[in-house]
Image 1 (cartoon, rainbow, N blue to C red):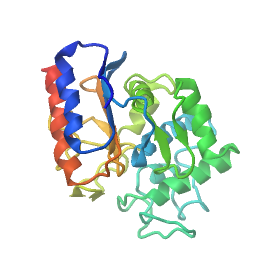
Image 2 (cartoon, rainbow, N blue to C red):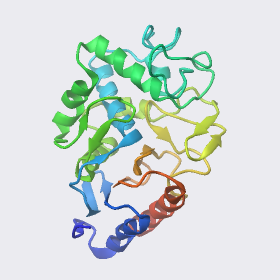
Image 3 (cartoon, helix red, strand yellow):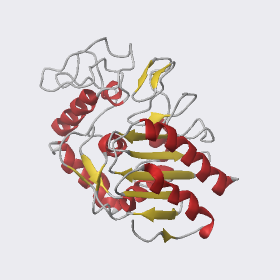
Image 4 (cartoon, helix red, strand yellow):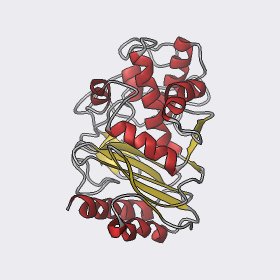
Length: 290
């Protein structure tokens, strides 16, 4: 583990961040972010980790840029990339009806669009294909041009599925988290729409945490709302949004508190994470917001 790297506040948060060392990962890096940038960081913050499903917020932000550039429309049909009647909004909100994993094509739908919340990597892959077709740019390259390059995310690369294939560092994701707290790439109203409940009232399964009624989701961002159990803390506000990944990674943004947290590890998600992450988040909030 590398030497702790601190900015502000001073030493009051170091011991809280250092708890990540007890998670059983060989390598771990964490950071706490405010609207002005990184408040504190600890561990392997410059190391490249697999993001797994933390790829999805990165991909979603690129789609929001495409929407503002009028390259795509959220409510335009996406057939043949998605099911008949499905839109880009359905795909991003896991409401297209597609199964979890749709490879190889053709992708199979379990329900009509808008009827159920089925967490679907296949939906994100269909989204990537649709955006690529509309822009004429491969989706990974579009993410680079639309998000990584403008934000200076030099170690973030999406090469493969927009659902889970990106790699990045804590340092880069701290910049992304700051962007999601105080957006510059897209208008604040665009991000507000993306982090509001899409297709309210749909029930579904939050992977690793069971069935949620409702299972609220935004446009690529998982919403805390009133979900229980959940991977964020009990002190996180209902407006918290973000994602966690199977690679033992998470990113949450809490606009109500003006805080965001990034954690990247090389230990696969499991019961350890479901137990450790909420308590960790609560400690951070207690230290920084009292």
